[in-house]
Image (tube, rainbow, N blue to C red; front, top):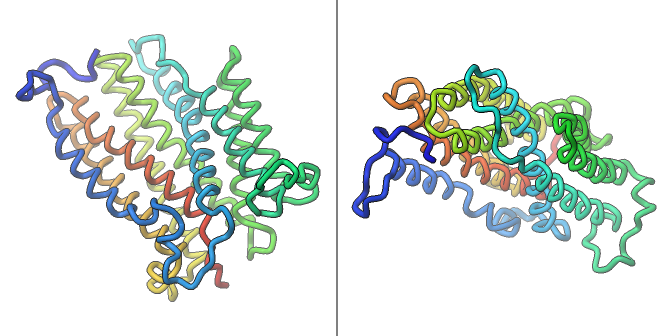
Length: 335
């Protein structure tokens, strides 16, 4: 089963069908990925020469938070796209197999790992004896960490139940907990920062997880008319999501890096360097999204838009990884 009609495929030298433009999409993916190569190697390259010291276990925390963000995006995207699909006339009734239970399990493990770090005073535990579980109830960060663990457990139970749509509530709790964790009460106007982060995280999860599930749905449906209609509906919503992600990201960055210091901090701090890599990646994603939108509207076969869309998913995965690293490096707060 393919995503396109036979007329949209071209045979390569080995007799295998390939989609036009696949090579250009792969080249664009490689070029954009190079922008984030150094930060993705870990916190050490980002911190080199800045005079900043990394907190213990920064690399592990970045990895755990990347898994947590991905575990949030997958089920949110599934719920979003399944809702779009149900509203399409003539759409096949059965969606692809849900990845939500697996995402909830991965999210639970990541949340437990992050909670163990909080339980040892933000240090890397070397054994069970180092973890003060009771201490989690004594601090704001500890309570938020426990909330995320319990929310992912509940989301997994909901995903495996007869009403998987109910997992939206524990997933929303995870997003709220992350937004509150990112902005401690000692910060200036923390509720504004938490609100911006909540909108940013929610829109990014819908965008990344939604595109992934839309492509999985198209693969299951094949090259029928409803597939192009589903991708078109997703693309219209994704344009709004991109605008919201950009606006909230810019506002959040300006709160931490005032306009007069941005030029220096983008190259002189670890936070600025990782943020710059994220901006370049998001710009690449936007370019791929525009390419897919043009193909969707102008090509003889609208589903040729799947080639840049697949590249877009891959780059969005890099964006998630960079976002995880961004939460682990020192934040240059200057009020």
